Length: 92
Image (cartoon, rainbow, N blue to C red; front, side):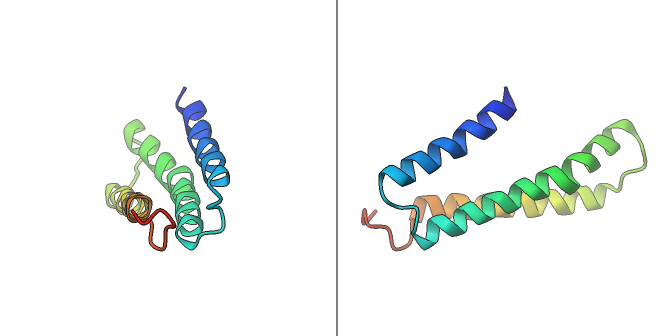
């Protein structure tokens, strides 16, 4: 179910941005790039390190904390961009 939601939400976002004519806006392009980078950080180093730590296979907790912090920072930046929408045509 999580994977389905993980695919539906960006698809809905692209459809909404396309309908509103906003796909070419810089803040949205940066948000998309940061979201993709967050997905890479989650999939490549974070989830395997978390699994290894839970299974007791000698994972480094400090390394997991580092990648978790990077992931959180990326998502916080995307959240701010989506709320502030610099240069948005809506004026909000």
